[in-house]
Amino acid sequence: MSRILSHLVGPRIVRLAASLVLGASFLTGCSSSSAPAEDGVDQSAASELTRGDAIGRAEQWVGAQLLYCQSANHARDFDSSCSAVCERTDNAAWDAYRSDCSGLVSWAWGLPAPGRTTYGFAPFDTSVTQEIAASDLQPGDAVNNDEHVMLFKNWAGPGVATFIEEPGCSSSTPYAHEFTSSVSISGSIIHVSYNGMTFHAIRFDGIQEGGATASQPAPPAYTGVAHDASGRGYWIAGSDGGVFTYGDAAFHGSMGGKALSAPIIGIAATPSGGGYWLAGADGGLFSFGDAAFFGSMGGKPLNAPIVGIAATPTGGGYWLAASDGGLFAFGDAAFYGSMGGKGLNAPVVGIARTPSGKGYWLAASDGGLFAFGDAGFYGSMGGKSLNGPVVGVIATASGNGYWLVASDGGMFSFGDAAFYGSMGDTKLNSAVVGASATPDGRGYWLLGGDGGMFTFGDAGFFGSRG
Image (cartoon, rainbow, N blue to C red; front, side, top):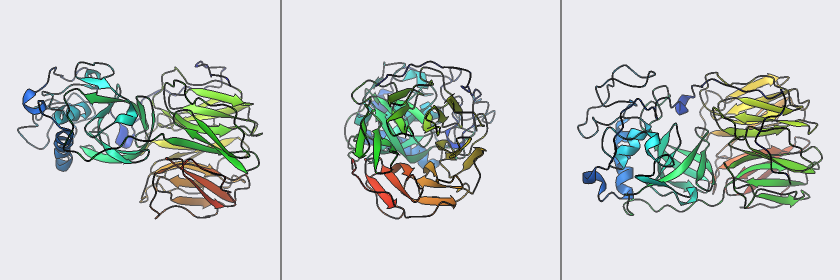
């Protein structure tokens, strides 16, 4: 096993700068220092604040679809993407608060108006909040980073959670709303697939138990599956770096039990099946067996988290895909283009390469599909109604088709990709988080966030974590 160094190697690495407007995840100004902030706690609201109170207060804004503003009502707005003056629903209790992401959380917790910014909460400021284990998140807690903060509502299932947020003026839903998303956790870190962001789990010091539906800690989440060269075995990767082998897939090492800076989001196998790479949301890369290290984005600033990894046909390189559509190429992996710096309706969630390695597809959570190099476009689910967000893309053996995989277990086939079945319309214990096609492309495996495995076509079942 080799612990991958967090430095860039060679000129092949493509650095994608520029901020990206991401539909529901555009958050400019949510943590701006130009927005007024307030210290202290409003004792009238927070002295006996229960978890149910915090959720109830936040849901008042959700019910009103309170528009995002980075200012108090009828005041000058500090966010250049919003109107010059904040004009939203009048309510004497809310009017003095900023209705941005941190204003929502401040209101929910009874902190005084106009509300703290993201830098006023842990891990940056621990005067009223503390960082906690992500698996211990309970209703009324929150998740925070330097750009965005969201109230945690509840666990909706293993590896699935519901949040309440104010997403931003440039969002397709520029008002307070709630959403449910697949998540992966590692220590205090939680990665949210819905917006492709990584957060710290935090708890308000003044919150008390009571008034909210019981919330159970999330079990360890599993985030990726890769098959061995024969197709008679596979590896399942956990968000904590654990690797679990089934069938004739051999164990070459893992990051299980070791400290990680960010959750593991995917696994890719070498052509021989004698090794594999684990990719972290922060761009870190860990190699095992005959998988060589060709560079990583670990320790480098990213505009958005890494959400996918694909290896070249030779095993001499790999691509890392980010949720903003950015693409980073290492080793003999060539750069054929990306969606970095372009307007996306939804975050990118996965990558698949062509058989030649001279192209790749990027899939977005709304079913959008972007083709580069010799990757053909055969259709997508973009603009169509989905029961669950798309979580990945897998290619056929010929490269003349692909499947889009949805969190509800739905499968959508395009080109020469045949439909062998799905878990759509079937109640799942946990959302689907990944998939892998068999070597001949006549079947596929679907992985649930709880480690459950579902097989279709000529994909054999060799065991699961579910």
